[in-house]
Amino acid sequence: MLSAIGDTVHVLPLVNALKRQWPDCRITWVIQSVPHTLVANHPGIEDFIVFRRRHGIQAWCSYAELASAIKGRSFDLLLGLQVYLKAGLITWMIPASIKLGFDRQRARDGQWLFTNQKIPGHRPQHVQDQYFEFLEYLGIDPEPINWGLTLTETERQEQKRFLTQTGKPICSVVVSTSKLKKNWSPAGYARVLELVEREHALQPVIVGGPSVAENNLAKEVVSRSSANIITALGDDLRRLTWIIEASTLLITPDTGPLHIARALGTPVVSLFGYTNPKRSGPYRAFEDLIVDGYAEYEGENYPPTPTYRDGMKRITVEQVMDKVSLSLSKYDPK
Image (cartoon, rainbow, N blue to C red; front, side, top):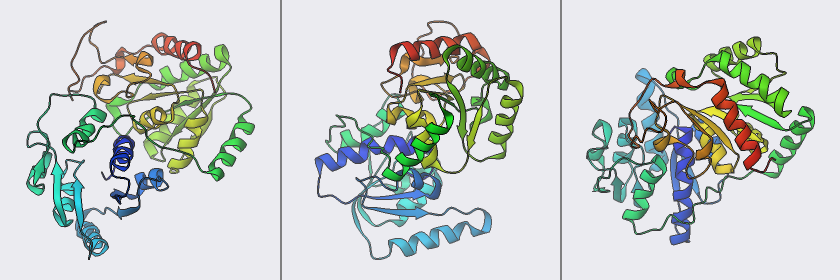
């Protein structure tokens, strides 16, 4: 699993289940640089091979570096969890007795060509359950489900200093994703953060990555809102993690921080309209806090298919605030 932050979080329960079943096994994770910072200190993983992806003519240098890193190594089992060509090439390069991947229907970019065993086909389901299919194939029970995403003592101290500076409970919010169609309106966020501050006495904190798009959207939200908003964007995934862990709740569209919040047990008000919440919503928790713009009418019983819809515009400020109020009344505030 190379790149996506949400999928990186989904892998952690697999790691813990493998360790429960085979305590003496050694796990090596091939991963890209950014998600590596999130899981680098996870106790279930003995080794990381960081794939430093380049583009254009330099792309082959990335694979040359990988070849050097795996020279002399061999593995009993490889789990091919990511179904794209770059992952397929890596699967092909790594010497392993068993290379387990998705069935041919779900393996994109010919990724099925690089594996020698396939999990059976399955009807659409939540992405986390989809990854658990690998455990089921191996005869391993995923329960109890545990992410094991924890903070270091240094991070606890940084978190404490941040909370002292804010002076009141935090409502973290993500205003932008890498896919624009997942985004809600800046005007909607601006109003919600005003109400969060005024009606619930929470400190709004905008969190997320360092991209130009995220910074521009954050500036627009701040300029439209009368709330006293703290902007905490940046490229430090561990800082993002301890801010979310300290938050009373997180408001976010479908993006990586949603799944970080779920793993940490932070209540998450999630905004869905483009992607299917039954497939990529918070796993087995906080489903009552989903603002469902994906449904084309109230109560629609749609299946968990990977189908996109243009539903973010259906989300209203009132719907979001109803879920914020529910979160604060139902879940213990931090």
